[in-house]
Length: 232
Ligand SMILES: O=C(O)c1ccccc1NCC(=O)[C@H](O)[C@H](O)COP(=O)(O)O
Image (cartoon, rainbow, N blue to C red; front, side, top):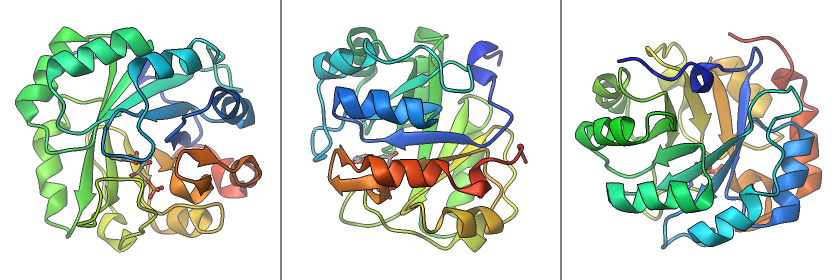
């Protein structure tokens, strides 16, 4: 399947996505600190949930590009939403990408790919055991990237839980992938010494409370030497 060239252009360094943005000033500041992608939680059960109209109030104030001059991605995070809801939220929120964080089928991913050909598609998987990695295989040809997150029975994401990174120490899918789950400025170097993702995704490890980012932690993250070397 052909994918739009512009959204397949990952930066030479590790791609950093900061998720759970709910405030305009924090979104702008996090972009200025070096994020390549910002995530907006479109899952009503989440304490970080914001509506499409609230997302738009943030996205239309964001810079077009990251500090590296690459397009700044604006990703809506959904869990088992309908294609119609996703498409409407993308339009109203002026999103450039969609992260599917529930049990979305390959068929839904293919439908979204056809309906939103210019929109970046990320499929998240919550890793219980090494077997979960096999479930990613059929998706690798259709989505732009995978996101591997912690599994807990309490919540779908944003839990701050880490997981056994040795499961993905040699994970090498056919598309880029994000490491997520409990990453913080303090453990990201260790995570990257054990795994070789194309990007990382962080949320609660950079927060004062759900949806309220601590900019000093974000600044400390981007000062990490492990985020500065060239791609893997
Ligand atoms: O963050 C949420 O509240 C959330 C709710 C429902 C589905 C997904 C959600 N977040 C998805 C993300 O991409 C988070 O960044 C990811 O789970 C990592 O979170 P954390 O462990 O807090 O860094």
